Image (cartoon, rainbow, N blue to C red; front, side, top):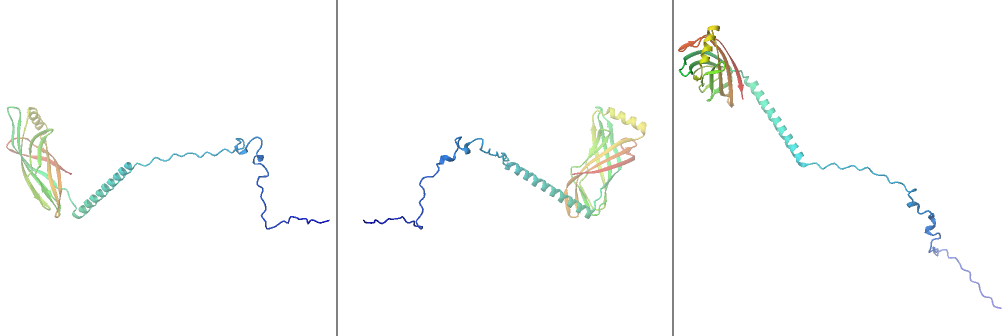
Length: 256
């Protein structure tokens, strides 16, 4: 009787192990009968809502440009004011300016008559003394001046000062002729006569508006105006007579 050899499979340790082609557990087996827990609204976590912050509106370039222009303009004006102030301060320290002085020395009435049409014709000759007390400052008296004589609110005469230059520490005597005519002057004549008889004097006012230019050393500045106001009390207003000045006082003011 013949013997057949038995063949036993030998396990090769170097051979790769075979992987199952199908999963041992079906994919749907891990899911419960109630459904997918990922899709269950009870087990699903609510998502956090992020607060919405609105973006700021874009800046307008036009407004920023206007602000810059305003700032630059204010800075330039400030620097200009500082420069002008510094210049005036330096001039004041160097030249030490003083105000000029004016006085009414003589007043002559050459005409004072009431006409047939009730108008009043007047003519004055005035002598004014102008003093410049400054050591380093000269004064140019320019054209376009005006001097007037008033009684209360009525202008009696007017004239102008001559053009001249007044040097340092100089005193100048100025002669001015004035004339004028006032309409409907009957009431004014009556008031003048009553006041002269009652008080023994008549108050007059002289106003001077004089354009001048100031000279600091060799520097000639721009034109300004001298405003002079003088209150004069005279004894009477008689024609062709030198009026006696009882008192006079003048005030000076500078206008740019």
